[in-house]
Image (cartoon, rainbow, N blue to C red):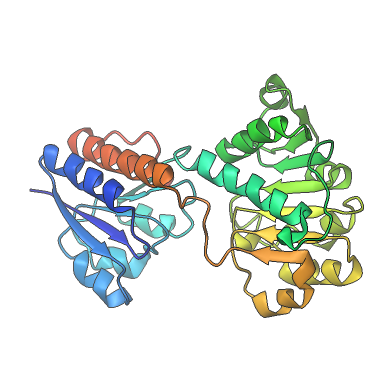
Length: 306
């Protein structure tokens, strides 16, 4: 019987975990649950005889793969997959999949909530502003970006988007203005919601030149990855522009330095975008079903490595 490890340092909600376990058992697989583990060694011990692993933000690198000689697939319950060494997986003929779209609404709702919190001055009693009529730029028009656009329409925001890999007609079909470049997006939008992945090309790409071009009373909202921010440049912008705000769901490496700009800066205590009962349930169930299908047929519709 194939073993499937559910390895979650930040566990799924209990109901979601139980449903995942049930799906695996119903399909003749043996689930193994490793939650809230405190060391990498616990993970290394747990993977020794598993055929598949379901993870959240847990790191699966070459050391973990080498400790799992029977491993056939890793599924990240969520969209981002930079916590998995995809090149190492390819070398070992391990299929890596994600579950795109399952957490998208949860992340988008958090983005809008953080925007409201920021423009209302963190609810400190001082008079704030409204989102209605403000220009919103969506940097990357994937599942989360599209949900942000959908919700922002209800706030009466004027919405533009740029995505180097999404055709303009797809963006415009949703009633969103498609811009030609990231430079155009930042120059023309008071609020930018960031949804790009962390890749060799995007790391530290949100830099001084982009940020300084944003209009007065600008705000950058990051629910993507901290690595895409050039933190030194952003700190420089915050120092130069008291009107500029940075709101993020990923604590920066230089958090203490950002705290010097407390009125302009907010971060959640930990990454919260997918932390809803619904997102937990959706992503976990999708991951379980993808593993069942892959082990039975080899089908991998959301494979992310070669």
